[in-house]
Image: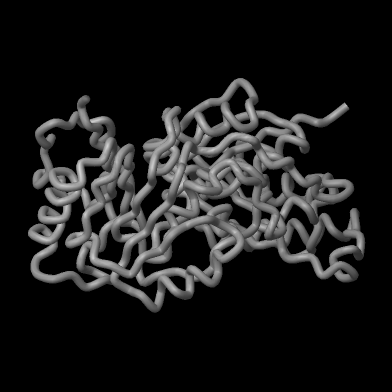
Length: 371
């Protein structure tokens, strides 16, 4: 009988509904509770394996290990000394991530010192197996959250964030995180039935295109932290490739940085059928039948643009919607520019989603052409 674990999926705030939809489609489990910044659910080890290899929107997956009320350091020490660490610990020197809100214990440094001291005492009574030395295991990450005097201890099952796919390593100067790109592609393409041409007119390293093309492709190009945990037995089972994909007939990326495009072409050669073209999309006719335009344009911060950013982006917006007239047009912009863009003639606003990208408040827009 498989053990069911209490899990928390960390999701970029603002993308929780899309993440839930992805879980329900790819590896359904119930119930799923949506809270700000994540999803709460219970699942077994097989689900954990599948989720790590197929889900594209979550940042990482945590296992909730224990929860208890604590108001003083002696109680904290006692609880961590008595805990059965051998069921979860694979390295004697884990890393601690501690946060406190509205609690009597609020000195994170002293909390960590107390936990480490308690762990050393616990290891005297229940010595750790030496597998970590023989197999060169990495230190695990444990999350300690104390809110309203209730401590929750969680183990990071993922390791490096899930958006680090180990699939495409070459990046431009202002890359979009892979899980953001996957979410945007899912939202603009997920309900389509007919074949379309996907165009990113300012593609940079092509993250939006590659995430759209691989949204249903399992990723096995990296290891996950749970593979070294005591409760994981055996090897990571390869998830079968899904027969589903977005209805992309052709994938085109345009950019002014020809050197970057050539590097990306070489990296993706034999992996993805993506055409990367060194042209200015603002002077190139992109008007084709059944097109979807999706882009993360430069804002003039890390990538230079001509003139003021508002003028540049307004020009691009009008060109793409009035001249190229795609079936759908989606892009992400700083939220302080929301007032510049209204509903264009012949289009309806399909999505206006607020979130943060690298700490910057941004808005993801999708307009759909009215037939």
